Image 1 (spheres, one colour):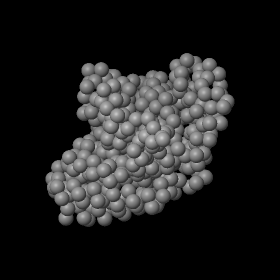
Image 2 (image 1 turned 180 degrees about the horizontal axis):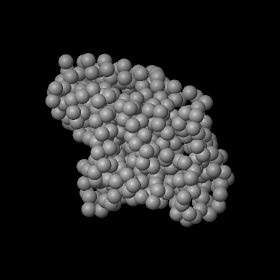
Image 3 (image 1 turned 45 degrees about the vertical axis):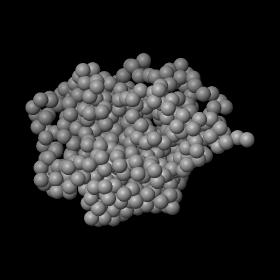
Image 4 (image 1 turned 60 degrees about the vertical axis):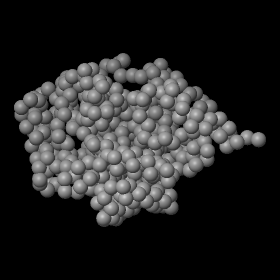
Length: 453
């Protein structure tokens, strides 16, 4: 008689964890002890049949949830035609149609639509690499400005652009690439000066301008790369004024503005792209994660003349723009628009923020609740006055939530932020169930020093 374990994976959770311990390097960190046997929508099941609500969604790669039936159908149909041919050998419809769709949804300035082109890679990090290559080649300049506390990927140039040394860069500091400078990014909860949000935005703009006046000549700067909301950095939301002012300075000096929408894109923030909240039109847009609905793809979309400045053979990847990933991305855009998931992202965000604000009234360990749309987080501290980070409380809360059937992930400069990346297809019942589990888990850790009020 077949058991549940045999029909799903043939191995128990303990056996899979043992194999990971033996054969997978410790450098690949895993946030929970859960082993996955199957998944559907906002739910994950382990080999023993235990059910978990997924508030991580593949680190934001599954805005449509696990195993969306229309995505699977589109992929199966494409598999019957061909799986791989390479865009550097032949041309195939899914690649060019996806480029066409990204042109259609590109965040243009109001009344100023421009022609765009796209190139596809295998991941967000590869897309960042390509965006920086394109910017340097198109402008003839070398320097890239990135921001402190940012995250752009783990390949060498993307890692160098990342504005956090610990974890991501510490082990590789002797091998980072040159000509990337990091400037301060506004962090309203932890400001560099005790000023209001508008004054903080202006202060960071002045710091940016000062850098161009002193150690970075504008004539040497190819591009600025920026997350409209910092993802791994802890869902830090800058003042909209800051993004608009930085974009204006870039225009004045012919510096390209690259929006990294790898985690913020595809309706996550209540807009198709988070940069739309600031009314900024980027020169280059980097997307990945939920663009492929779980299939690996990265994209650089931007002004056509920037791509046209590069000659044949300067861009390419054997698997970049894989037909399977392209059809998944095409279906993703169709579903987001047809099912109103941009608006749904806003609705989910209001529920999350309402519950987080209420939790902050109950638990003194919550220093701040913040985010845009369905990209919401809470930052945990030991003391609200000193804002001393509490990463141990975050870890304890995530463990407690996992034991209760909820998957969560930490983030932040000090690893003291709990972020939520729920599928936009989650039901209201599931959303509230998960929030109930999170609140109960916070209550449990508060009894052990988490700061219940």
